[in-house]
Length: 166
Image 1: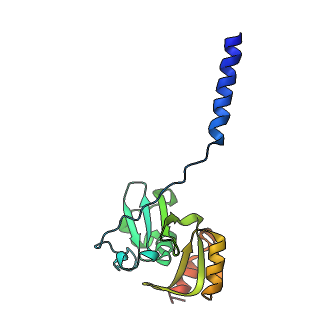
Image 2: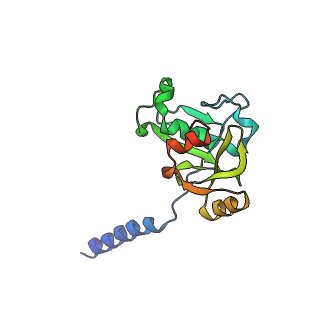
């Protein structure tokens, strides 16, 4: 009976203990070369690394983008590039942008995006990606940003507006 109680205590303690451990943050890598081109704009992405984005599909295929605007344009309208073979959102494994301030690759869906700032990407007017809200608001105030968005708030209409197609 004592062995049973001790065994249950150890099991329960270990079960709760693992939940208290810090969760390791996923590390992203921007593994482009000098030959890597933006899928949407056909620009060499290495020339301005603070703007680079990347989407990794579940099949392992990697696509690079010269800016958050280009990445989100593809994300919202993958059928425009039907040869890539994206059929649904389930085909996206990782969606990564570069933090404009730190050059750190970050999860695009968790980033903050500044619209209307004076910062111009190789693709023209763009959305500046920053990892945390505080820094995004400071950047927006310092560079005449109009609004800070979350990834899921960015619409195809906004991308077309920034791109000059409206």
